[in-house]
Image 1 (cartoon, rainbow, N blue to C red):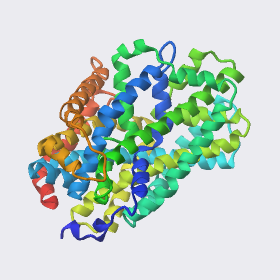
Image 2: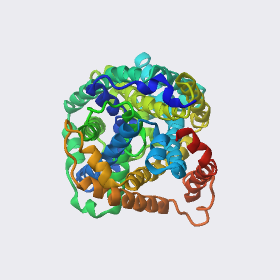
Image 3: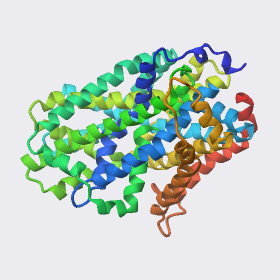
Length: 496
């Protein structure tokens, strides 16, 4: 029985604002609030992080928005999940390509739900306990949580609520995001306003926005900018492709893609203002710590990028007027951000199973169980979580290149013509075709080679069980790819 008979396939986003908010739910996640400020701090030159921001904005228009347009156009045209889109767009021989693209965000979901659980725990904790006033207390709270069974419990909680959010199809996803995203934006704005009123917060903003132009000559600045923008926007994950299957024809591809990308980066900038302003005010004004030491604190993230958010931010809030209330808002916003992305990650594989002929409720239940079971190792070990974040985070670059390859296989000019046939949308120029055909594949290849080169350690690179080794990526990607290729014909049969 074909999944096309499932009633959920007939659903559409009821309004354009519902689609935009749901798309922002994909893009706006924990990467905006805890990852962006840390990466910006790591790329601060003598005068500031402004050079990184320049490169980051450039990649918004060269990488992220073109890929979001490609995902929207493909999903809306073929009305299928990720594998179905690749089979229809490239042919049955390439079902393994779509399968790999679909698997990458699923692998990320296994540990991302654990991180969302962390956010929920800290929201509950800050709402019911006093904030830590020193590093030892903050570390004790974190270690107590990580060494117990709480990470498993909060991981399960995140998965259960995610499953419930998508249970009724795109209409329930739309309703949830209409609550989550406006609430998140309000919380972020409140935190930003409070941060801007702190003594010497302006020093933090100066470091965030002042460019040290010689940093633009550093290859790492450009690589970090591209990587962060891909994480920021969710471009190349296949998530927009999944939601696009539920777009109405009149919901324009181009305007929605630009609004999604620019709106997402705006949230990242606001998060940067909030964190840089708060950290510099408290550490510089109240604790007398030098600027270079403050930046070092921001760069040191601890396992799985936990430090700045889960260890330092509660201490910082404890040192400001109204900090207890603001901490509750902060972690509530962080939970909302993570959850809005999580439900898109759960919808992607669920839709794939629906396309394969499985009833929607059964498909969602299967994915929920799989995510919980395969997330257990990450909930129990930060080292395992860090390895999975490394391996499948890098694989996102491959996914972006494969989506560009699919568009090229269909004929970039034909896809562009189809996009521009919608009269109610903005017209897309020929620059997009060149970006998809040339820039995205080349950038992904260069990024991948550079990234893997950084992990090349003589005498260790061949060890697939080393946490951040070259072979750890190759080993895990190869297992998945070999399985997908072996079962290519069987997979294609379900999606033709």
